[in-house]
Image (cartoon, rainbow, N blue to C red):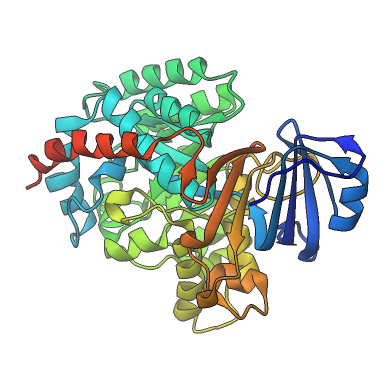
Amino acid sequence: MTMNESAQSGKNVDLIIEAQWVATVVAGSPLLEHYSVIVQAGTIVDLLPIAQARGRYATSNLVSLDDHILMPGLINLHTHVAMNLMRGIADDLPLMQWLNEHIWPAERAVVSYDYVQDASLHACAEMLSGGTTCFNDMYFFPQATVAAVSQAGMRANLGLFVSEFANNYASDADDYLQKGFEAHDSWRGNPMIKSFIAPHAPYTVSDKTFEKVVVYAEQLGLGIHTHLHETRDEINQSEAEFGIRPIQRMAGLGLLGPGFLAAHGVHLLPNEIELLAEHGCHIAHCPSSNLKLGSGIAPVSSLLKNSVNVGIGTDGAASNNRLDMFAEMRLAALLAKGASEDPTSLPAYQALEMVTINAAKALGLDDKIGSIEVGKKADFAAVRLGDLTSLPCYDPISHLVYTCGREHVTHTWVAGELRYSNGLYANIEPMELKEIIQKWQPKLKSHKQ
């Protein structure tokens, strides 16, 4: 990286990034080559060929990326970041056994404001180093997550978690809602934080509570984020208790709509996919977690063919075991091809859209992030394509999806601020992360069954 005073005269700006390629992820826009992205006050104000930009703008913060592709910051559409310190605590188990016998007992033992803040900071560091600039979370003590996000300098959509079951955070559904709304009010003026109401899942939330969620979401203008059709057991349980499949229950309770984001969506019938499309719903596809828990493979090709907006999430590190959006993007593309027996299914560019602009649409943030265009926030990831292990490169977009990994990310900017560069964080010290691990690992290990 070079950062020096621009020799040319011109309008002074906060940041200029010169890149060999710029993937704007704007529909119909070609891949830009030898382009500059001009940033002022955290916002993209211009995109020009490098030669033109040098004659028009000046800066004391010039970043030259001679063998890189600059892309929009990645958006992790479904995760539980505070589970980062539970990575590997219980592997190779089906979902409900994993939850009932390992994860929920561990949470009862350690989850607190301090734990969530520490674990979330650890997760933020992992995501920034892999080019992720925004994530959609669902967990307890969301104000603690805000503290971590603010330190890391990221962007987040935080779920106001709701369940019927008591834990260290809340005693019942109404208590969850009350605490969630208090948290929402506390960050309402923070431009980096947004809220959704997050009822955990159909098997942990009653009809009465779902009805309240719908009313509050409408009154406050909030989206709804929940797990849906993740496993066959979930569907069998719903049919036994309610006589209908979970998505039918959600439809009957009025949850489906443009603000509805369903995590997983693994087991969907053709008519249910049509129902999601009809209501303008969104799916957060979590390929690694679904495979690891043996939940199945989501029908992504059918969802996309029916114009359902699909983004990609990692889920929590306890069921993944990493927050690596490059791994998820590649796996999503390969699974779609294998499941459909069609190699043209989910091409590289479409996979890139799923981790950028599609995810932004699902969060209602596509006017601010998800693509590189004038007027949007300067959230970027720079990916080096010049390593010998990744050369030759014929198609940079294809390379991003099928060849590159998070280890090729060299810089991550959020709102024009450099938050990660070549192993160093702007606001996080490696020793701080080590101390977090040393503090919590023994406590979690003592409750591992």
